[in-house]
Length: 337
Image (cartoon, rainbow, N blue to C red; front, side):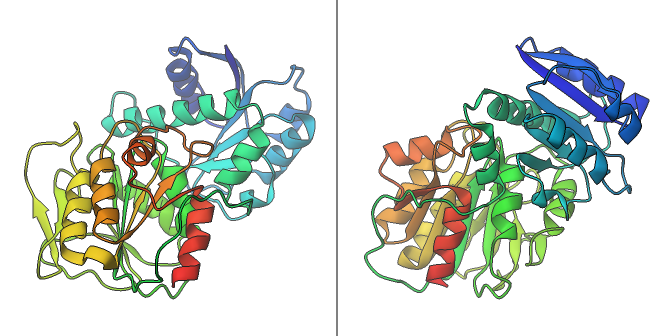
């Protein structure tokens, strides 16, 4: 059983979070409090397994409350907020996308699934501080297998992510150089209409502009593109985006497999493929194809993956030139560019 302390100023938010998390038999919400320092100081509670802060829209995060609970408990803290600037300074703390809570809406169901998966990961990890530090992109020892045969000129970076992707992409993108001279194209599994929320959240930390890919558009260097809702995203022989309205692949649409396959065929040894945390096999076979064509490939390692499904399958297929944490992938990219 994972004991959770909820901190939120809105009674509606507290009630909705408590009800939603309480349906999970692995969770027990031990208390719900306002994000008020005096109320937090009066808290009489043994250390919970996870502390969940939920910040209302357009309000800056109450840093005093976060700092107080950090001193009081060694517990991992997950903060759902639009204001991320100072939280990276607090150890054992991870920021998670903030949405307006709407029970029964696909956005909420997707967000809740991502949140509960993260809660389980940080609560059950034997050394949660190390896990959260890795999510926070603090340098650690490189864990790589294999080396690129040559420092090729990369023309495109293709990324696939699923469960655990939002927070992983946030930290990964924030670590990229400001003057990256290649386009980045991302497939993130999510429900329709959540993409704008995700892009707005990621743009807070990403030094590069982020946009949704459009049919017929040519990928521009230094721009991050996301596959749009309800279409598979591919690259044509003319090196422009082509949206494909085919059935889901691996039960998802968009699928990283569509993107990776087209990238391998069009760019060959000038492609870079990255497969991050996620459930299932989407993109694994096609990441191996990028490597087979001479491209550079990365799979997120088990230690930092929220769900080690997609990268594990790519590794099994010998599709990864490197097996690394997200921050190590970003650091290795700096060497190439």
